[in-house]
Image (cartoon, rainbow over all chains, first blue to last red; front, side):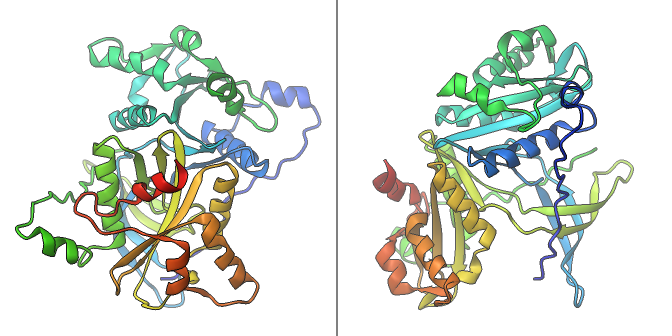
Length: 197
Length: 197
């Protein structure tokens, strides 16, 4: 099977003329996923951690093998993810997290998470892995890291018939804000350092 | 976006009438991937470890959204994997491995591994994660676990112009054999217990 190499779009970092402005408005125009991918690339280059986003799970139904060309998937479907999107290793410890974004400015809707992902993070925590969620309020430019132990009670509250979101105040109370930086963009490991090491 | 749920084929374990025969010929008819997936499902159910196979990475080019039906991927291509296929957490430690099968009965061809995967396992080892490879000689019914530190010199030998495979004798000398069992099918964690804990 010929595998066509698909080049990842690689943003080359250019030093901005006005650093201050860049920091203040650093969150504009890039998605949380882009910011985290850049951050993980930086951590990898610095040999600080090895963290990757998992590929989107798809069920492949039909593949064509044209002559002199690469295999082409002609029919496939999205599958429900059974784990979180990100995992990796940091100082020998296993890290696992899910990252989600909302435009809502007052609360984070829990519908962004799949029950399977919550179950997965529960299992990871039992195995003494480090599990957490990263939530981005894109309208506010604020990103928070909530350890899974602090996040889970809000999920339980929903299951017991309570509200289907976490208010911004609650997030602020139970999380650490990840400030936007230049490099890395979102230095979440500094928070993990304080919390877990 | 509607996500069609694709049911995983779930083998229900039926206790065989002749246990001995089942063990002896346990390796027939199932691929290494099936055996490892069954093993990981067993570990998860027993709360012994949380290990998953990563989805095949694909580059999605075109998606159709038919009415009253799930999103269908109409054009996509296989991407080169940048990491290994399996990772997870065991007793708080990060585990990472690649598993490959050969029909060859005398040596394991190194072409089964991508340079990116070797680089990834090097990075994982630097971060004090537990990295290893599982090689299956399907024609012999023998499966081996080789810690990455023991595997890497053979990769280097190839890079320096040496042979492009590891002989079966060399594998035997530098690895532990994973015996086939009933449940789990391939109890590789027992070897990790001896080597790393």
